[in-house]
Length: 287
Image (cartoon, rainbow, N blue to C red; front, side, top):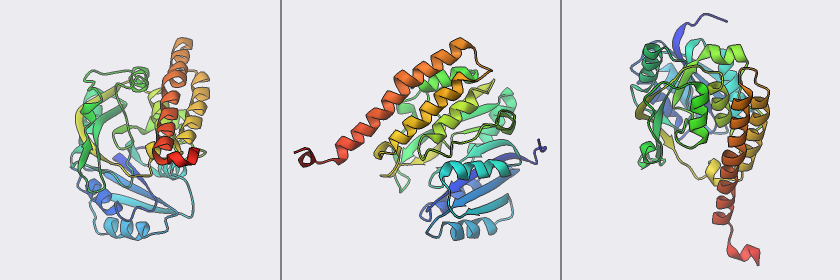
């Protein structure tokens, strides 16, 4: 493994994000933590995402950066390309339409270092496209101040007590390198959730910061508003197979996690899909 050059590598997949990418990048460029590298993977956009990202990044000299252009790739592929290029001790993923508070990455980095943790996360607020808060994290989820094992964090996640979204966590790069963990490139949805669960299942110490430092932008074409939810179901079925074969888990842990995915997570995803179907289908279509 290459020795870390930076404290944190920030990986941002970007596709047709010309409306948001400048705001996203400027929130990263405003971070209080030094020694950050920024890797943007532009995957086949048909708008000016690449040009805007290049302009914003090239206008500053504080942070090292790399802008990678792919002709065509899904978000899983884009994130995996980003992983191949990281040189930081910790890895942080951010979506190209979301943005973070100025001290967000520093808070995660410091709590990992102080607590000797492998993984740290904070909360997030759902916002509209103008950045106005729609739903606060603490309205639905609990703060966990104590140090958890990765397996415990997965239990809490699948039980619905916490939610760890893209842009809310960092983890040691060694976890994914030593265990060959990658994003699924077969699914266009759910790959972010299965990835973080996979990382956690190979993590010893997890800590949380009780603040909400990410603004998670809600659109009309996300997982909760599209039939892509059924692709997420398939991603979780694949995760169940992976969990069943993990040598670092006890038989009881494997059975419990697979069962929770089967009886809680997958039915929940189906309900989201059917809710969207009912919401967008007119009654006359059933006549």
